[in-house]
Image (cartoon, rainbow, N blue to C red):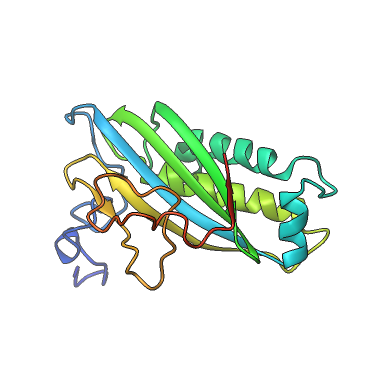
Length: 201
């Protein structure tokens, strides 16, 4: 801790790469890092009424094709993450894929982002599901203004110095992703869609 300004120093938070030796926010220098394969999956959910879920599934919402609009919004947002999150790097994304599925009262959203670059794409995947969820809210609010975008979270990542990570199905706060990555140690057959009524590309 800096005794003069009562500001934490980098030594106080050794795992925070976006903090310099004086405790100030910084952009990480990745110029010496090799371009390697990176991928990340993130998930979120639009919690609404059973009526809205049925209307979305039947493509009968007043505002056009709800899912296609949300998908394009999420992909566009992922490509512009570096403009939204101040310390993110501008990455050349190889692909961003957004999928939807349904439970009785939720529209489940999952995004996968991939690149070959010097840093990970976790924030791109998270941004994709967040903006897709907000777009869904905009599309359904005339029918259900109380709808909420909940549980924006990282589900798995691959590549980089820290290797692979996944949010295990045994985690009581997690919903199994639509497709567990092959590298996930807690992947179990049939876990992918136990909680889903339907899935759409």
